[in-house]
Image 1 (cartoon, rainbow, N blue to C red):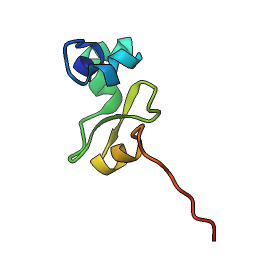
Image 2: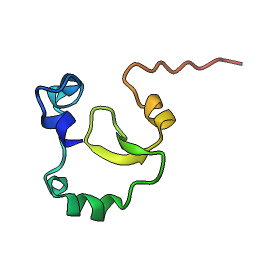
Image 3: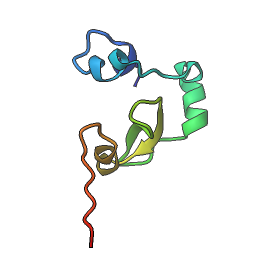
Image 4: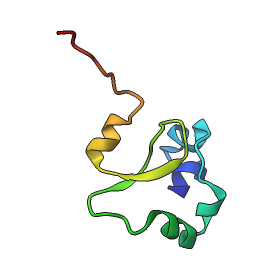
Length: 78
């Protein structure tokens, strides 16, 4: 999480830190992160609720795919 936001040499940095995505100051301490988020549930990783906002939720891979910037939502009128 922190390396995506602050590791400018990482290949995925432009999609996170390069876009201004950051980690709140409180979570720079792992103890604070753990106190706020709890243990990671099996099958989940950290995700943003808002794709332009701070990282802040546990989510499955399927759920993260739905939060991707390149997802197109279509509504079929019936």
